[in-house]
Image 1 (cartoon, one colour):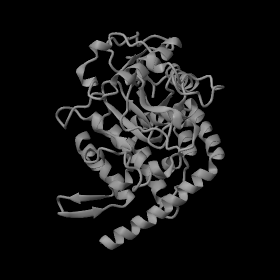
Image 2: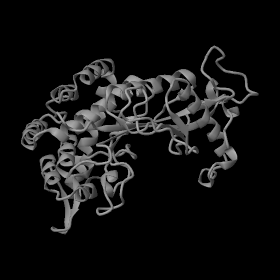
Image 3: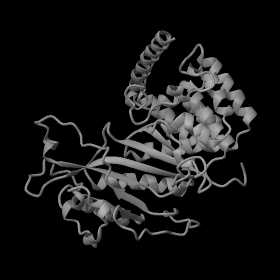
Length: 393
C-alpha cells in the first residue's frame, strides 16, 4: 500500500566454527578456509572487556573468534562489531549504500549451539568447535539490505570452516521500526500463520515443527488447548474457533498472553511487541520467526527473510474482510485435506511475493523426498494428538 512505511527486519545466524590448534596437522590442507591462527587474532583493549563477558573461562577465546569474524566482515565493507565492543557504527539510514541500516552486525557466542556429533575416527575430530551467533542490525526491507545478508553468508562460508547442525536455528525479526504492530495487524498476521501453518511447516524439518521435538520453536496449533477461566475447564478448539478467538482479543497483550507469553520457546516470539503497560517492554518491537532450521546458505536465508516480511506486510495492509474470506476458504479445505488448499508457493504468489515464490518452487522440487518424509511424520503426530485428545475428553 502506497505511503506505508517500509517494514524493518533482522536475521540471527547460528553456527559453529572449526578452530585447529597450531600443534595439530591440518586434516584438509587443500581447504583454503581459515582454521588456524584465529585464536591469535588481536583483540583491542581486551583488558577492558566488561565483567559480564568474563563469566566463562573461554571469554578470551570467544573474543578472538568474534574479532576474527568482525575483521572478515570489515574487509568486505560491512559494518560489524564483536560482542564486547561498544563503539557501534551507525551509518545514515537514508544511505543507498550496501550498509543501509541502523547498527552494525554483532558477532557473539551462543550457548545453545553445539559442535557436530562426529565418530571417534572422523578426521574433523581434531578441530575445536566453538559456537557463534552473527546478528544483523535492523534493516529496512529493501533490496540493498537483502543483498548485504547474502554477502555476509557468503563471506562466512568462504572464509571459515563452519558447521551448521540441528542445534542451530535461523531467526528472523520483522517489525515496523520502533512502532511495532497494531492489534488488528497482529490479529491478521497470527490468523494467517495459524491457518497456513501446515504449508509453512512443509519448508522445515520435523525437528523444527513437531510438537514433541521442536523444543525451541513450538507450533501455534499446539495452543488449541487452553484453560478457560470463564468455563473453569480445559477447552480444545478447532482451527476455525482458534482463528475466531484471535480476532476476539481486545489487546496486543491479551493476544500475546494466549499465543506466546506462557511458552518462551515458540515458533513466533511475540513478547517484544509488548509495552510497559501490557508486560515487560520489548527492546525491539518485532515478531521473531524462530522455526527455520539453521543455515548459512545465503539464498535460503534471504528467501525466508523475504517470505516472512511479505507475510507481515500482507497482514498489515490487507482488508480484514478479504483476509477473513481467504482464511475461511482455506480452513474449509483443510477439514478434508489437512495439508491445505493453497501451497506456500501459491500463497506467496497471492500476496505478491513472486520472486520468493519462484525460489521455493525450485527448492520444493529439489527436496521432494525430505518434504514427503516430514509430511508423513506430521501425519503420524496429528493422529497421535487426536488420540490423546479423545482419551482426555
